[in-house]
Image (cartoon, rainbow, N blue to C red; front, side):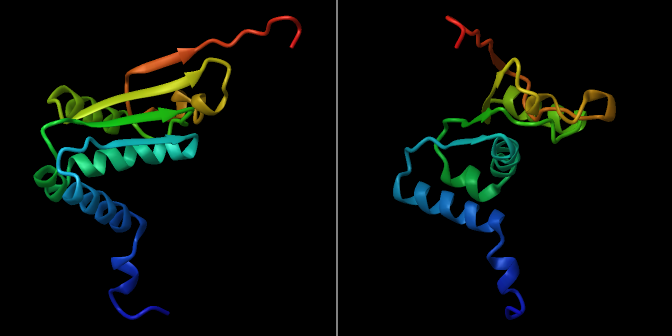
Length: 134
């Protein structure tokens, strides 16, 4: 196994945080946008929440809010997490949008009946139609 502490130092969370902080150090006026598709969209929402609650990120980032755009993300969160994301957005630290295709089953699982919730409220629904029999 890895030496003590090495595994913790290289967790995906720490790697992402370090990369974002290094990018902001090199480009102090940059805006941060986190995005992902499907499970990556859910992870983008989690990452956005984590970054907006990081003291290091708050100190390094410009006055611009962090932006998260999640495409076709499943409902991997609960109502309490969604309320917290809404609060972060309400105070101006986050701009959030989830984009869904109305017919996509992934964006509807797990069902609300078992507590599934999206991490962000703002939604852009795309209604695709078939033309010419295609």
